[in-house]
Length: 433
Image 1: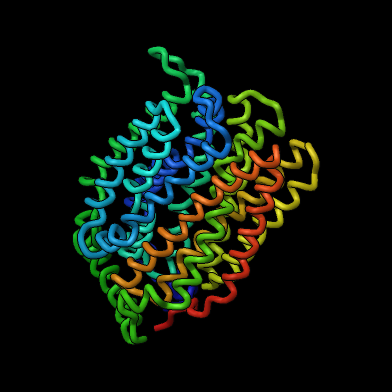
Image 2: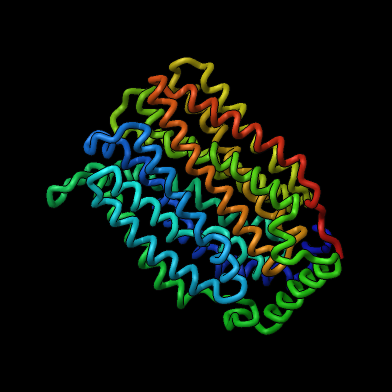
């Protein structure tokens, strides 16, 4: 690949990248904010839901986590469809179906209904995130991809920053005799349905179809991406089946499983941990729960930029993950200090999001086309099973011990193991041509 210096003096590269980013990134950013709100708003709804419906921590943790079991079912075929069929049509289908199911979650009455709707919600959303990662490879060269992933995934902390106070306000609504937590879930599902229909008309599948790009930019980008594809083919690319059995793909899946365990165990239980720690009301908890994600946003963008600038992925990923485990462990040593706990939770959140740009750039260093799509789907689907274990085991251990300390140390162990596994990955070379 061209050096960073060469990129900076190539006017058509800069012009094309800016135009593509202006056209695609704000919309993709919005889609992921909506998606992530629907995924994690159950954590805020749980502040009042568990009390009203009589759910134990174990029941709530199981229901929150079973989302990721449903998620596995369509992940790999859904991601391949983005590559071989149509990104915009598949993403639109996902958003419309999950928006409807997200709103229906606000009508549940029993634990079994909670389990089923969360399971179906996960199945409906399967393929969205890895599909977007594959879609970005249609528009960004390898040397630009870390920044692109960082910009897209900055939607996660933004969703938490927006979602926390928004959820707090919705918890206060009691229309038509329904509790605030029900309206929170019902209303936050509506934007996904609207965005799904807009997606069909707004997104473009490939640069060659982009009428909004001038001819010279469209031709240049198509040629650059084709050259990258040919470079990978010259290196004896793996078939889909070979790629799924590849040692580094298996390691990437394990890395993602353990860090996702820590991520969702932390994110979905953070409101209740803060409530127990501070004794504040549900609305006040939603406000302070936004603080760690305010810190995470600039950290993610900075690490994504630096990873692209240096072309290095592995250390950027591993050090970010290690910071999660160290910060969560330290949070258990500060007693009941709310300010210190929030500061350490902020460091943990910075690590939980800073590893993402480097991590998701790794598979595309040694995989291409359908093989890359299948493996990104594999990594995301089986890795996201950790999203079941994290919330469930924290809930289970808190029921057994009466506090959250054992659950937090489980998340610490998951994060540290994830960071160690990163160093076993061999195939994260820099592409050259």
